[in-house]
Image (tube, rainbow, N blue to C red; front, side):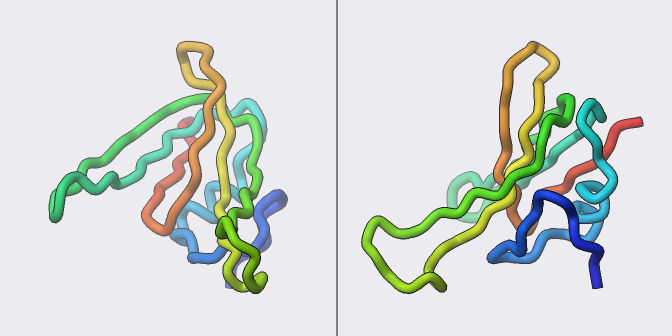
Length: 103
């Protein structure tokens, strides 16, 4: 069982255990490396990595354009950070995303 992470509500799809562990330890100002796997064409994949300074962890609740039952809502955790070039950015995490704290 994982320890609850402040700012991270239960998500629709489970995150990697090591990602949850990193999110439980990270504090504003810590350096992060976030890696996601991007699907290219039918069966090719490409790792996309970004680094920056952690600002906040939030959850994004999305839903369909029509009114339906609450079970149709999708909750996605988002990491907000400052890129090295000064750009404020955020990444929506999925079940393949790896978040590492850079010492």
